[in-house]
Amino acid sequence: EVQLVESGGGLVQPGGSLRLSCAASGFGFSTYAMTWVRQAPGKGLDWVSGISGSGGSTYYADSVKGRFTISRDNSKNTLYLHLNSLRADDTAVYYCAKIPAGGDVFDIWGQGTMVTVSS
Amino acid sequence: AIRITQSPSSLSASTGDRVTITCRASQGLSSYLAWYQQKPGKAPKLLISAASTLHSGVPSRFSGSGSGTDFTLTITYLQSEDFATYYCQQYHTYPLTFGGGTKVEI
Image (cartoon, rainbow over all chains, first blue to last red):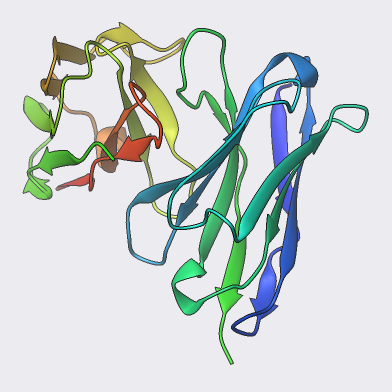
């Protein structure tokens, strides 16, 4: 079964840091680009960052550029998102998703992990 | 960044109805537009990619059309399990962007 499982969310103070993980199973992880999408409470979907299958190319939304870093460990079938200089408006459920061959859409999603930025 | 205007933001419908949701992009996308369905407390699910290609397992009552800047998601004969929020997403240009969502309510 193709599955993505996020972890690492929690409560963090403004200016703090966090590392999210996304464990993949059931597919050739290193073959596929991956992405992070977030959703603030009661709000819509917001694309955050993407990474190629090899990890050699990365992409970021302007709102997180310079603060968040996406990475992957293909030997561990795991995707990461390092969140630094967190702000209250980063509070959201963070989803990882798989990008199929042929287009930057998101065909498999994890269940999400909640990040709350508050003092 | 490409802006996606999705309308309406919400609509009321009944089972058996035909529902249409539209997305308008601030610049041409060719056919690089996808549609997702999200139910409360759940992750989104991919319905349609390339503006009109139904994803595996998605019922045929869902259909997509359009190209360039104007796109439509149509649900014919609405079922109870279709009450959800729907989002469009452009993947023509980074940064990838979503429409604001349409909540389909009973």
